[in-house]
Length: 221
Image (cartoon, rainbow, N blue to C red):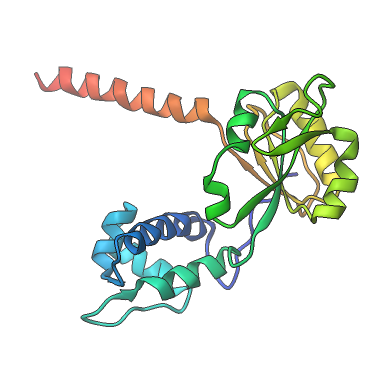
């Protein structure tokens, strides 16, 4: 069965899911040269309520200073440390279709604590091709690459029909954290974390909300 991230020191999964948003907002403030921020300002920049933000940050032992707020650099470090981003995590991307190529070329990984260390594909026509400075390796090389690079995270960007086999191969190579872009549910052993990114589901939610706007607008006439 799939196992989600566990609770650490009483920090809920919901709080963990919001920490990257706080980190994004803090990085934006730092880029503007802002050294301190109030909970209200940071909450607005993160899209949450200030009471929720203060409660989330209290789990990190960060309460801010009355009348001053939070030190941007220190809070950035606290959240980065909690998320395990104080060192780079080597990542393997499997599947060099359009999505896999786009992910390989995404410069944001390097600035957020992740290093794309390997690109893999099962298609012999793609193997050997250089994408974003890395040569695509065959799936058979995965165990050796995982050991040499210390891979800890695998990104699955394959069609749904291949995703489970790829997940099995990643797990067999010792990779216990998977980010799945394939539109399918994966079965993994206990202790393996899976995060699913389903773009079509997000579009369905937006379509539903657009439809509701139309319905509500018609009713209000």
